[in-house]
Image (cartoon, rainbow, N blue to C red):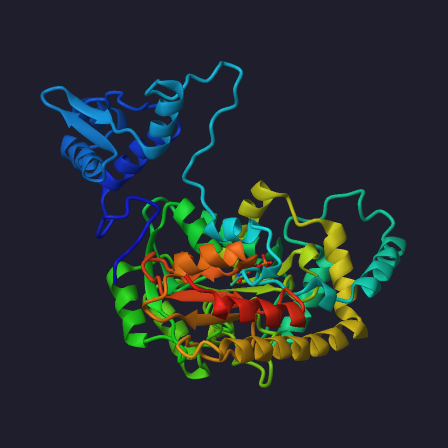
Length: 485
Ligand SMILES: Cc1ncc(COP(=O)(O)O)c(C=O)c1O
């Protein structure tokens, strides 16, 4: 299996220092410190500067040349190649160089920060099939607003202070008890940290565990925002396939053995984007493998409570006795996404550095959100809400499937929970073409390639059936399957 990282796309194993030199030069070019047609420092001087061997620097320069980032002038050296955007500027300004920033201009941001999912989801459309979020109309909004008033009455000073970095004591105690009871495992409140959604937990764990060029393991496909976080952190990304029956455990073991990843980021229950669930029989074995190969498992369990018939298998976390699994239990999706509450559960070796990262990021999740969540979560109303929500989501899944059936050559596996359908398109249908044409008709979906750590799979799309109402969903998918490219 090929690894991928943020750059460069052509590299094969990424173990080497020369790739860091490559990244460094790319960064300088992206920030405009090295301008189009400007001469790069000589191999000798960059090697001295970065304290690497001259051959390492030479290899990085060769790769820059190969990838068209620089060109060579005989006996003179390496020069920055023009890019499409600098070409446009050239046309506009008759000036091949980026204009000098006046001294009072802000520092240009790094261009490497990407979030493809964010871009797709930002496009305003009527038939929104790209957002894996629950229709706000399905949440008990009126009850929530009455409830907020009660919380203020109970904690009049709630906005007047910071909460603890690890999270509100009362909430941590409560969630500790709730999770310990529902999973039937021993747990202590000091093993629980509250973060602002699981998105923040993934980001903090990436900061804690990844240094540039560190190997990590993800599923293929995977949650694309997590992928971008890991890329931005400079990880070398390896992937194992996830299918309707989980993983090929031999492949997982081979990856662990060969690449020694720092962690394996998994979303084994109603997985995003596929909706697949890793069977119970594999979960225990995965924890054994993690211990054997000393690889932390990050188990992202954002959709556990959104099952349609049977509750899903117990999390991998329950099989862990020695601290090889860190468990992310987000309540953000189905309770009140706006509150952004997630419990991160792990042993001391994870919790301690996580708290440092959390203190640097935001000094603690807002106390008000935590108090509102705590009291709402404990209410009887919440239990009724979740039961109703499951039925409503199942109904939407069924509607989506009924309408998709009109496209006889589109294939998917029925998810038993979660928010998404992972649909395979026939080879002749271009996903990019379909997306462009769909957007013209005010329909959006997620092109599967952005969930692929190898950025190769161009034959899948992710359809989220939970954000728009039933009639819009029916109409949106009807139109989507009729779209001609
Ligand atoms: C697998 C997965 N993990 C994490 C998140 C982020 O969720 P949260 O709202 O808890 O930050 C999402 C959101 O779609 C997701 O699909």
